[in-house]
Image (cartoon, rainbow, N blue to C red; front, side, top):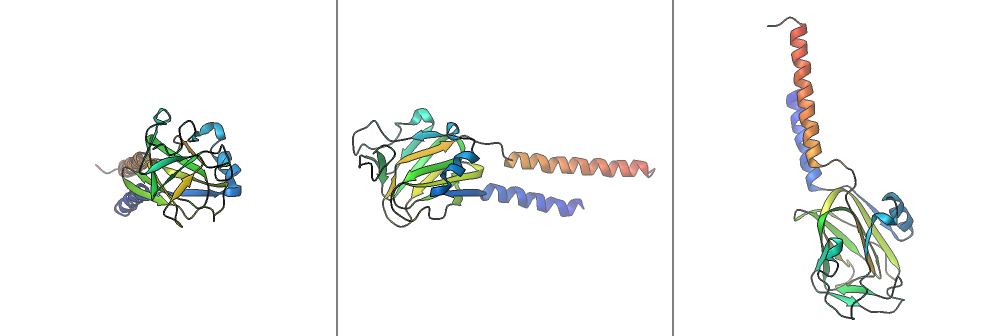
Length: 205
């Protein structure tokens, strides 16, 4: 039994590291997203206000544990494009978001369409479907069962991506690869103990 169990455990651990299970939320599911993470108090929000139009965005929100890279500029469009507060960012062709600590949910209010790719230790673990189908005032969010430390935000339908507000949150309690490894070790220990007990009970040695 043990020799058949080990390969299964190793496959489970390897697959957990390579691909995350993610729940997507879109537009009218915005309340469901915030309900699933325990409320809006459990997210940090970058609203991109407080700077001149066309200001390059990099580490201005590092106090929230996030930095941006790529050609990312503030955008002082009117309230129609960025209905939350009239301000957002745009970039070409993508926005790279790096987090100081692993996160497990990310969301954005945005015009147009949006895609989000999640990374852990430079390895891609998930790419979303196309979130929304155009227009303004859209919402898209992801909750991952595997922590991620980077997100690539892009527009699948255009070479320019725009965000009104960005939301993200800290890790939630989910099994980690280390926990899976500990679980595998526990199974092995219990198997050895059961085998030893059977041998002693049968009077061997």
